[in-house]
Length: 396
Image (tube, rainbow, N blue to C red):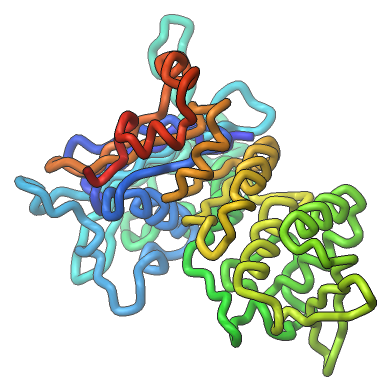
């Protein structure tokens, strides 16, 4: 499944003045050396997601907006640019969201913004309906239900907060259905990168049963209620148990116990022993979290996962690749990795792999081409080719 079909970034983080123009598929596995810009792509998506609230929410505590702007030669004063195209459900016409961000007083300010459809005339020319446009201090909004020229209204500048996207300011589904629909997509994007699996992490401890149970939060503090939801979906429960047995062969079932009004995950093992999440290994908890993320019945439209292989035994990584491939039929995935074993398991679908390299003018991304690699893949696996330096994305 694909939600975002194209992402363009310019003058943002490690994406320089030339920028990148990246076509996205259902499964996007990114390889590259440390510091090449893999994580910055996911950072950019977090900034895009924050358009529904406040751009400052994407910044780390105490961080200033200037840290997100490209610092290359001739870049001083240039705004960052994000442009995204996405497929609209039940429509042959996609949508386009573009915005520029400047830094003022350590914060982001919107310099330019456009939300429009991605319609093309029969002659191949762009002919978009603009649902919102803001440029040179003038803002225009398309109001659903009005007819003709009255449908587009100019907004008074003082009624537009320049520190926020229009998505955070006009979200009425009746008057602005296109803005609302896109905002809902962004809100549901899930990013998993700052995971905590230690002894006292929220993922392990007894949790409030009142947490949302649609999908796992990055903090993991709702793991118990999401597991409980999976237990009542026959297909999801079967897949969850199959996945757990691949990693933890002693398990008979996964269970929840309520203690003091809080829910605790337990593994029921062969012989009748129950082991709480607090006593499971870090790798086991990571594997459980990955299964829950990838198997939820109603997944988010886009899931980003940073280095899912960390803490896992190499033997289980081919299984992880199969899980990613299967999950990409139901959700869009962007995954970063340093694992050649994981890349090996994608040898039959090399187009799922994107190589990231960094040059003087910034980070660059290129998707592998299966036809061009056919002769190589007759003799080597994809991971071997990457290790040998034939694909790029290496330090040396």
